[in-house]
Length: 535
Image (cartoon, rainbow, N blue to C red; front, top):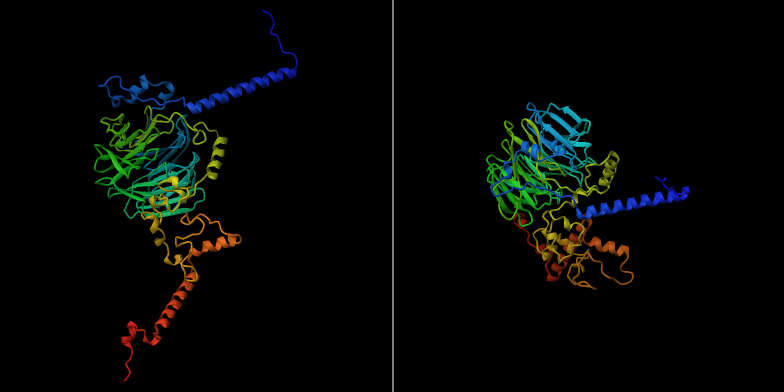
């Protein structure tokens, strides 16, 4: 065999190696781009082979033994903790870490994929709810008297006294707001990046044990004992929307990832689906043998229902036609009550918390197979996690941007546009465009000399009838910064301006009295009857 011919010269060999490396990098970039556009990964569901076969009869042991490989088989497990339950569970946004809390004080956080324990503590105090914050380094716990924040080593970091006797917690990742509600019925928003209390709203509907957030617009949905579901934002002290959902107390509420479908469960044994886009109209109602203790939507739209000692999963529950049978069901003997169900993001896994501990179930087709590494990366390193945390803080949205219609934020709303009228919580909600100025202070339509404003009388020079927010094209010398400032101050009402307007009204009344020839003594007063009569 002849010897391999070698390239002479170090420079030539280096050039060829550099060209090969650049070619390989270009091909990898093209493949990544194709994978992003084409989304080659797809979700698979259980499909019956014939009409008589039912997918809900497939048990977890049969699924693990016959249809799963050894990697996915490890995702089916049970943690037997009968002395410390019932348990509540929560997953991080990337689906990598699991947080569990027992009602008798047992708290643990771990990487459930690797089986690596992060922390485990005994609080010796009832735990009602647990919630991850922006990443796996911090989490919040709803305890007996107030809420606490712990780090990933189990060390107590903060005690939040404003969250009194909380029953439910939820974290708004794009606003860094922790929301809680509990026995007093007060909804509390707190910014975890600054520690500031952003809002405290008294629902005035008593104890509340059902709460969730709408992932699309960050609106909080609360279920109450009188059967109503109220929608809240930190910008309004009154509920934006109030829906009479059940004939009994609302026990659970959930919203799908698109923010268009809401599911509610009540003591009347009904699980109802609501269309949030169409005037909150009911879609379907499903019967539950016992009241649904918890509801949860997966990334692909599957609905998990916790009732009794069962965890049931429905597919296409909010479709055009009512589904007659569930997609999957799992019975845990002796585990009543099943208190919490949560889907793991980007995984076909359902976490179930019950009286005997924790169960992890495989639900084919539940998770989104294609993830955005800039949004939530399951394979993020420590350095990537730190960089993502800094970016999240820089991109944090203010609390006053939370609205039912998030598309209103950043839009230019004119008098002819009624989008501002359709946003509950604003001062113009429910009014006609021609009634907006009548809701303002009547004195704001007057100038300091007592005459109507030229900008408010509907006759504007230039492009008369255009939006007031649009600056008019004025002549030279009339469009300076000071002139603009003074024009904007015309509608601002303060104490000095109020005194001036009162003085103008008194002088105008005095001029009218003099013009009519009425002296000050002839003006009758209701108190004249009490004057002493002259004899």
